[in-house]
Image 1 (cartoon, rainbow over the protein chains, first blue to last red):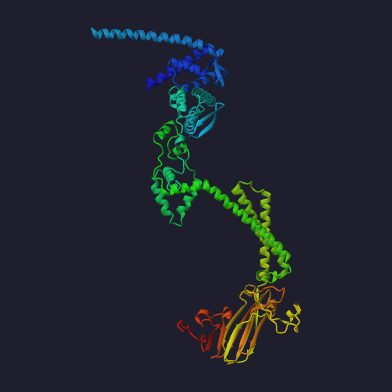
Image 2: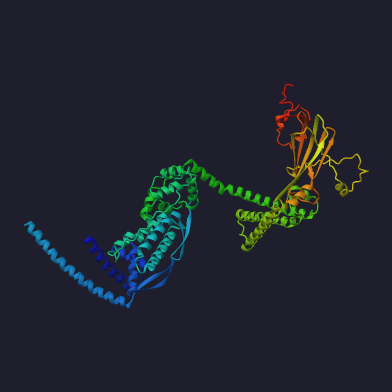
Length: 122
Length: 512
């Protein structure tokens, strides 16, 4: 249960970060975001993305405009606002810090486990 | 072949098969319910719907078809993700408030799949979670309590809709109308078992009524319209005829002869209105029901109702007025002594006797009319009902006499007595033959006021009477069939005894 909860929290944070990253490359349509997220194996169903996009938009990180589509009604194309870009920069920094923290922790843990395996072997 | 729906989703029109539509409806309802906790639920759901529409359009284009089917919907839902998938990745997963499962609320429907008659009991069984057979037993037993069970059954039959769609059937069984429930219901289709013979019959009748029955129904309604129209026309013609023949003979016939002349016109009009308006209403209603005509103008229908009520009130007023003319009764008797004979013969004389008054009215010249008779052949019994009655009594003083009792009714005793005095009755004695008129006469243009003539013949013991066959109807208190008379004989013989009149030949046997 605790593991599940932690996983969800981690996924949630990273998902937001990834979505912002994808959008930062330019105007993009929701299902294209999903395609990328699927490729990254971060998201499996589309339905999850819409509440997230709406929330980010309401927080002023995203904006969208309507663009004509060849296969049906107009589509919402999302892009980052200035606020969004600022936040993304912050998140980049945070991610680097986090990744450093994790890498460091992992290294220590790896060394310890190697030592312990050596001890058991000897 | 499958039924399809047209849906407007994400501002595009999609043709979708019925079963696929049901699944999609349930899915979207779940999605809406899930996001209803979210402040931006409308926007999110709109986004999702738009995307679903787009996916449908892509699928239809890719497969070169026009209708979305179950597989398409299922694959779209898989791509979009179920509500469970949303929950796991939801930001506010911790603070989820369990919402009441409105889907699993049971609803009362008629279960026509397992019906014996109309599925009322089966539906109630589902609703109350009892086996349908107990409900049926209960209904059957309560039917014997003044038919209450049957009545309640009928009411439920009319009021409760039958479960038509899959969703309704699932609601009827209290199954959750979510995707899981749907999957279940597809795996275990609703059995159409135990369809009673009666249910089949009733369904057949229903189908018949909807098909050929409709034609028959229209024919019936059509003939009602035609007959009512004829009747309406007849009533109008009758009114015209009646008003045209105002001063003619009509007034002297029985039901009309009751009514005072001055009341006749308003009563006729009232009767006409009372008759014609329901006929008119029947015709208009039949046309409306049978041929989907437009409803009648409200002002017109209320106007007709008011006129009809006016007709009824007028009619009742005059009927009451006429009935007061019958309030008091009066009678007086006149006794005529007769010559004594050992045997009398009683006859009905159809000859019309003329009073002096009549002779003047008809301008009959007595000289020219000598030796001629006017035969009154009309069966006048109807004109003056129960007007003549005849009894035979024992004479106490040994003399033969005929007592004539004139009776009538009127507004006051004086009027009644006057009415009684105005009765003219013809009786003729020719030797031992007594001839009676079959009718009494009242003056022309006077009203029927229950005028009656009671004739009582008093004869001493031992006197014989030969009653002619025509006379029997007027004889009160003696059974015609008690006294067998000889075949072919025109009369039967009776004799006066100490205890009253007796048949002379008691039951003549067939052999002789």
